[in-house]
Length: 96
Image (cartoon, rainbow, N blue to C red; front, side, top):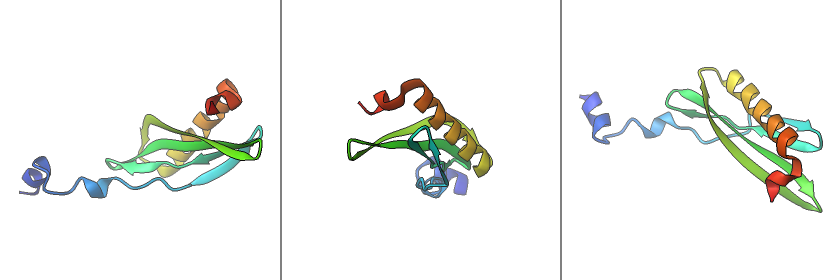
């Protein structure tokens, strides 16, 4: 019966998703990179924020990738890697 409830919107789906929280933060080439993976469908979705103080204003670039992992630690490491990649490829251009 619970399968039919989920199929027709009778619950179960909302508990599968958790809001992103900062799992780890690093400094990289003057940028702050925060890994913020969140639970989606029983796995952890790659997500994060790259930020930098530019002229007295903190600029942020949020990113979400399709990569999902069973382990939180794996999602955190990939999120940090993607943040470093954004910094290397775009630098401050990602903010504007």
